[in-house]
Amino acid sequence: MIFADLGLSEKLIQAVTDSGYTTPTPIQAQAIPPVLMMRDLIGIAQTGTGKTASFVLPMIDILAEGRSRARMPRSLILEPTRELAAQVAENFEKYGKYHKLSMALLIGGVSMGDQIKALEKGVDVLIATPGRLMDLYDRGNILLTGCGLLVIDEADRMLDMGFIPDIETICTRLPATRQTLLFSATMPPPIKKLSDKFLTNPKYIEVARPASANASIEQGKVRVSSRRKRDTLFQMLDAGVQTAIIFCNRKTTVRDLNKALRQGGFDSGEIHGDMEQRDRIAELDKFKDGTINILVASDVAARGLDIKGVSHVFNYDAPWHPDDYVHRIGRTGRAGASGKAFTFITDEDAEALANIEKLIGTTIPEIVLEGAAEPVREERPREKPVRARKGAKTDDRGADDARKSEPRKPEARTAEPRKKAEDRPRAEKPRDERRKPAASRPRRDDARNDGPDDGWNGPMPDFLSVGFGTE
Ligand code: AMP
Image 1: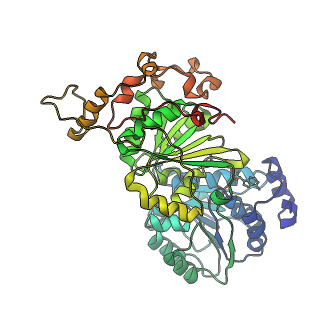
Image 2: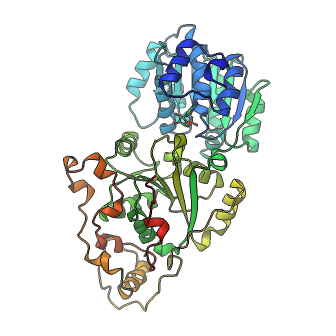
Image 3: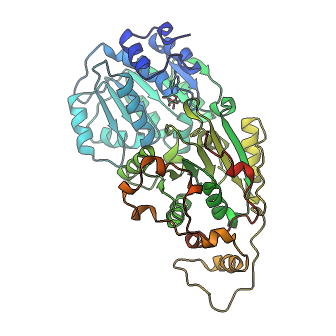
C-alpha cells in the first residue's frame, strides 16, 4: 500500500513525499480512510506507530474546505503535555505546507496574550492541553460551538494526569454532531466509559505496540544496588554512549542526577514537569542540536518525544507503570534506526519488572556488571564527618565512608579532569566532537564520588566497550 491509495489529496501526498515517507504505517493505513469518511474512531496505538500523521493528514484535507471565524476554532486536538502538543503542531506545519490552514497552540507556561490574539483571528486547528484550554474557555476567549472535529490523543495518559473531568466538560461544550477521534495506548474502564459517552459508532482500530514489534531496540536489565546506581550509570555512559535519554521516576532524581552528571563533566540537561515551558523547550532544543548529548527526563515531560538519533535509553529507575517502559524505550530505535535500552533493577523493583516483562511478553536479557548489585559496605559512622558535603544527608555518610575504603579503578583516579560543559565555549566543541562517545574524553572523578551511591567494582564488560552505541 502507498499513501496515494488512502484517498488523500495530491497536495497532501506531495507533502508526505517531501517528508521522505512512502508507505503508510498500519495505523495510518487503517485510520485515514474512515477519518476521511467522517467516521468517529478509536485508535489503540502508542506513540512511535505513526499515529500523529494518522489524524493530522486526514484533518488537513477535511479542513481544506471552509473558513474559520474569530474565537471559533474549527477543530480541536487535546494533548496531555505541552511537548506532545508542540509536536503535533510541528506535524501540521510539515504536512500542511501546501495548504493555508491557520493553527494555534494553547499550552501552559507561555504567555496567554499571543494565544488570545491567534484565537481572535480565527483558527482552523486548535491544539491544546486541557488545563490551558479550560482557562481560556472560562475567560470567554474561546467558543467551541463551531468545532466540528475533536481529537483526544493519549487518552490513557490524560487519565493518569487527572484530565478526564476537563475532557468531559470540553466534550459537552462542542456541538453534538461532530467527528471525534480518540487515541490511547490502552483502554482502561474510565476511557471506555468516556468513549461510550462521547463517540458515535466509532471504527475501532488496534495496532501492535511498537516496543514488542520493534526489534531494532536491544534491551537489557542491569541488577544494581540502589547506592551504586549513579556510578554504574556514569561508567556505562563513559563506555561509548553517543546520545542518551535517562529516565527517572521522580523530578528530584532528575534534578539531582543532572547536577551530578554536569559536575562529572557530562554534557547533560534535564526536562521535567516542574520546569517553565520555555526552559523545557530550550533543553530539548539543546539536545536536538547536539549542544548536550544526555537528557535526564521524567515520564510526563518526555512522553511521546520524537527525537531522531537517540542511541540509548537508560531507565535509571524502573518505571512504576509498565506502559511507561514501552514509551521510554521507544525514544530510541526510531524511524528504523537501532537503539539500546538499559533498565536498572534494584531489589525493590521485582514487581515492576515482573509487570513490564508480562506486558512486553518477553524476559529482558540480563546484563551482569560485576559488583554493581553488591550492597555498599557500611562502616561504623565516624564521630565527625570526614568531608563536610553541602546538603549531604546523614545516611549518605556511611556510603561516603565505604567508598573511601574501597579503592576505585586506578585509571579513573589519575585521569585529567573534564571541563564542565558550561565552562566550555561552544566554539571549542565542534558537533562531531560533542557527539563523540564519552569514553574518549577525559573524566573527572571527584564529582562522581559526591553522591550516595557507587558503581560496580569489576572490569569493564565487553558489551559496553565494544561497539556500544556506535552503529
Ligand atoms: P508518532 O507515532 O506519530 O509519534 O510517529 C513516530 C515517528 O514515525 C515520527 O518520527 C514520524 O515522523 C515517523 N513516521 C510517521 N509516519 C511515517 C511513515 N509512514 N513512515 C515512516 N515513518 C513515519
